[in-house]
Every structure is written in structure tokens, then in C-alpha cells.
Image (tube, rainbow, N blue to C red; front, top):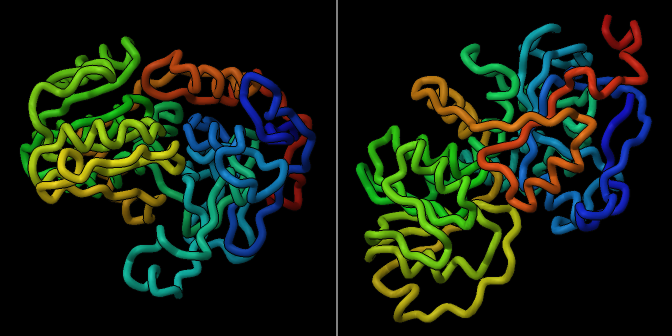
Length: 348
């Protein structure tokens, strides 16, 4: 099969992502083979491709917002059947035995592994995932609509929970891409007043269309003090900006896996009055189940832009440049011809 591979991490304006020929993977142990229908384009894919994150698997195939169908089962796979539609997300393995897993914080497991970083992901016709880490998806969502929920949605949900937004509270969102526009919908469904701070005019329009109380450029403060804020833009310079916008006792949640350096903070103006900064590390499977159920119940929907799988580099370049609002999704729609298919033995 043809797949995208990060052959030489570097700026996406070059050619860090190239096509390679690989055999269709065979599921081992408790894995299932997933035939990819669609794969969301996440900012973490950009960090993996450009080398912001250290290389964990040389030549890895990115992609961890995968929607597909089970094509084959490993010998120890349980709970899924061939033909079922599933989602493959960022978290793909935890040891289940460490102190963090035992207390329900599997996202902090030292032996955690990730799709599209430690293992090949969904920028390909097929990928694998351990059956316990595959997610059943709401029938109300088509493949393209479901894909961004599997990381952007889940991480946005966890970041919102970490921000400790009080009922009916005032929430600030810094950056308004794939994750933030889903987080906003959850907050609005819970009765929050949402204020968006972002550089993109199209993103500001989308925020207002979704029901945000305000949407301003990065050089403008929200119109009222905030109870909570979530920083989605991977820009450390925005940390003191967001902290200064918080009311007394406010909480800033930093959602990204990568962040540029934070400038020095002034205690009196940035942190005093019991303001807090909290980081967000991956998610748990329980986060995913809670968010997917909530998304189905409240009609949370991603604004999506389709790209053929063959145009993955273009999608990453457009993401970096902020050329679209919402989320990009790669689609296996015939523009990506597979040069091989699973063997009869694999599909048996």
C-alpha cells in the first residue's frame, strides 16, 4: 500500500512528508486492522512532521483522528467484529498497572504510546489499533464529521475540564482552530459565555456564528474578566496575556502538546489572587467516551474541509498558515489508489 511517511522531519514548506510503499499491516495480539475511510489533520501531526516533537518511530505515518472499519482481527482481539465502524485516537496503549493507571489517570502512564508517533497512523489506507483503544462512534456522525472529534474534540473536552469553568461561567479561548471550535460548543451547551481571541478573521466569524459572545484579535482583551481560559494556540507569549484576562481565582488550561517558551511572568499582575495555570496531557479513554456521548447528545459538530489523502502535505501547510477555519480531514475517496490489499489470510 502507499502511505505517507515523515522521512526527514522539518518545515512543511519543504518535503518532510513523502509517500512510501509498505505492506498492509497484519494485526497481532489484541490489535485490529482498520481500513481507513477518513483521517483528521491535527496540529500534533504538524508537530510530528516538523520535528517539534522528538522522533519516536523513524519514518512514522502520522494521523490519529482515524475513522474506518474493522478489516481483520488479531488472534487475541475481543469485543469488535469485522465490518464495524471504529475510531482510532491518539492514545493507543497504557500498561494498566502503574500508579497512574490504577487511580484513573492513564493519560499520565509512563508506558503510554500514541498513534501517529509511536506507531503508524491514519495517513494511509490501513492502520492498526489495540481493540481496547478503539472507539465506537455515534451513528449520527458521518466519517468526515466524526474524525476531528477523535483528538481535537477529546482534547478540547479535557482542556475544558481542566479549566474548571463554573456553571454559567465566562470562558476565554485563545486560538480557534479544530479543537477550540469544538470546545466552544461544549461550553455553550453548558450555558457558558464564550469569548474568543484569535488572529484569523474567518475563525472569528465562525466563533460568532457558533454563539460566542465576542471574538477579537490577539491585540484586544476580552470585554469582561474571565473565570477560566484555555490556550489552544502553541504560543507561550499568550500565557501572560491570558492570565491577565482572568478574574480572581481564575484558571488557565494549556491544551497543546507543544508550546513555545513562556516569557517571564509578573507575580503581581499575572499570578496573584490565586490564579492557576494547568497543563493538559493527552486524555483517558473515559474522556473519549464522555465526550463522544456528549457530542451526540448536544449535536457538537466540526466545521470540516476535505482534502484527498494524496494532498496530506497541502493540508498540513494550510493548517500551519491558518488558511481554513475548523478542521481539515483527509478522505480516502479514490484519489489515493492503494497498490496492495490485505491478503486472504489476514482477512480470514
